[in-house]
Image 1 (cartoon, helix red, strand yellow):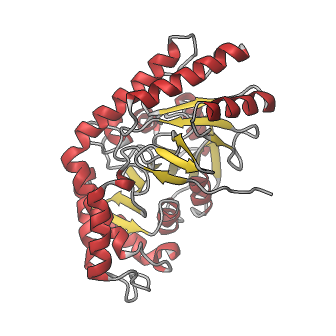
Image 2 (cartoon, one colour; image 1 turned 60 degrees about the vertical axis):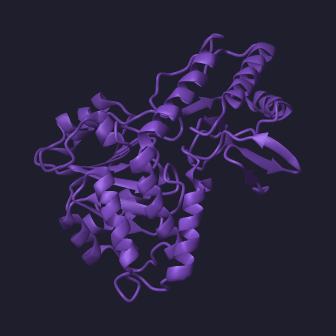
Length: 374
């Protein structure tokens, strides 16, 4: 049975655990906006002005003007024709798949896609074919297996959360049939990747006409909820056909108010914050690489560490705790059965915290005589 112990976040980059204050390299609040004072203020103002909850789906009596304002800001931020707010980021792909079910001959799924996309693929009512992770050649072979005249829907993460790698969307589009589409779960790329923070499509420099981008507001934006970014036809289709959207209550109004403020903050300060985030990530990766550790050149601010076995994992946990660092050990259903450590760098980490992490991981590598692979 899995047991969970509470962590209380204190400040921007530390947690309180059993009375101890520990450096925190977990979670994906990349700009630490979840603790930004102006977002707190917007949430409090939203509660006072609008109340807590609309208590109904948007297609009954739960449609509030605040949701429209947030959707317009999101569409403007990401440079899309329209945006649609959804109660959670996990639901975004499912909502899209229900709306477009029956329109595609095959669903092509990256073998390491997030579970939310696996659930979405099942809603498309067509055969699901997996292709090797981020492998454009195997993707092309999967297209060939679909047969002549196929109309596939591709489902992939934008930035993958396990290692900060990015889907080669440009390569996928080159061999995708003209009437095929790509559904990108960009939960981790949104706000982080690209010159303007528009995510993986902007980083890849591709046309959005055959891209549906799904995001969460709980990562870079530091709040809660999900959004689907596309054209107005997609929005209309969702309103007409998606059971998950029609039957769910939108995010609480104070959180929508906070998210609206978050988008405005990222518009105003995102360039500076992304620069700081990238500088921190590069600093940590360089510091670890100097001791011979193999750091893959991924654009995301994520550093995965795979222990050789349970004994090594336990030893690393103890070593991190001794350095006053919370050990970010993850073990997802359907993922690596052994689990792994995922260190997420943020723009809010100080150089002192980064140096502490570098020292701890390098010292453990030396003492354990590890393989040098990260």
